Image (tube, rainbow, N blue to C red; front, side, top):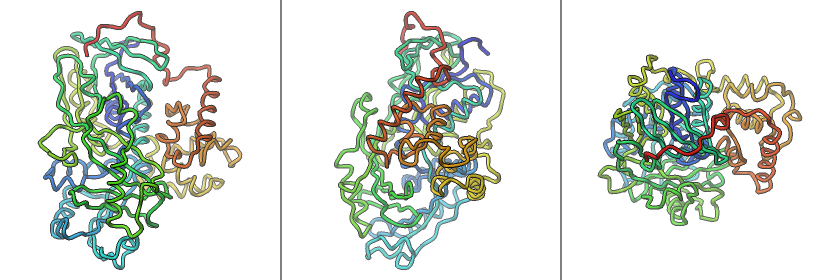
Length: 523
């Protein structure tokens, strides 16, 4: 192992794949540093449909291997993060002219049996004239199918992986830009720029490029870039369209599907679009949904729901760019969601991640560290399949039982707030509330449902540096926050940081010696 400010592995990219690799490697004894130019999960990894799923529609493209892999991972993730990942039943209204019933039954049979199910219910047909899920639908739809997948808070999943990595010794440096890297026979010399604009040099025995849409822009050394297909996916949120806890998977005439998912108690999340992205990578950071995409999603919903949805009903929207492997698919929706991993040992190891989806991130990370184990002499075996993520260490992965106990321990919390804390933080919600015995002791309410106690926890433990970090990535409370709330929260964070004398890992580079000039770029 190296000494001083040197690392065994430096990971570029604070999305789900980078955080997962950092966690796995740190748990095997590697000295790990992760750098992210913005906030954790600020881009692709917070712009998903917020599902852990096998990908029912991928069966139509004969991606049986990917679906099996994703279904296996769905079970693993339900067991290691029972607070953050929740079972969800999906209703597929049947439209005979789009896909015949026999085809859907065959697909659901495969979906039920490609991998073992320990928690989730199997699929079945349903009479939508009598089932509660038929109530909000148009009268012409009388039958359908129900199957299971799971919902997740995608950005929090990233944060929990980063948090576990840090607790196993990793340095997580957000708002830290990878500037350049020069490759030696046994190590990389890497130049980083912190949030204050200062340059630092660090050494690493291996470099991992998990930069998502920027993967080829950061291509380093002799490894060739791989052709990627950047696909824009957008979502809209409306007031809730139905009063039950099932989601809908809606077929379109263009063979795509759109989800309508109950979200944050009072809303419905609708998505996604699939459009080839031809814009600049510089514009990915400020990506917005187009009016044509809003119209497309509204039209998809209006084919099925009795009460129509219009653009004026959209409360919030978001968009992201998915870095997909290039294949022969003519349509962006048909492009594979699988991944490819590339290890280059022509000098100090360079590992590059191409593609992937949130459901298979843990498997991807395990394969990545398995590949790096030999060149880095890591002897410890794979471990993340059986280790709960922070907050997930509850008996039998039984969230309802944990929630009941949590409510009993903190009776002063309103029921919705108690459930949100239990879902977001799991067993660590007790640490958040340590020493608090009343709502008055929670401090000022800085934004709807956000009290000082929680905000302080997020700033101290979860790298939150702005109102946006807290309201949209550490939580989704931004959906109810006003401009005044955001201004108040940003001012509170600034005042708190100005009073903090001790640096922490959020400013990890500040304690490293500044470099007089950057090393020569190998990018």
